[in-house]
Image (cartoon, rainbow, N blue to C red; front, top):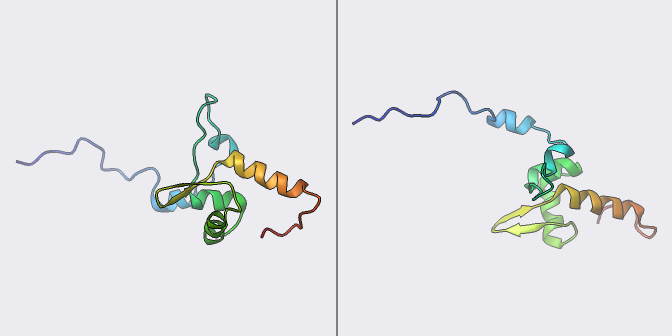
Length: 99
């Protein structure tokens, strides 16, 4: 017996090309109700920091950047990354190169 699908067969709004072009703004990343902040994956966090995703993964493994490991995936909070960058820039002893 053939069952007719109940969902639309139209293309998903975030096709791979549209998802790659998606640039989240800081307001998109903040929790609207003041609750839980959405976590970023490596590609989104790397784009936010303007570094290569592999560089960010290496920094996460080394414990250089604030993150959490969930299974085999690294997750980041935009607010934590922003605070981390600000602290590094304000440090008197810190060179301007990320190590």
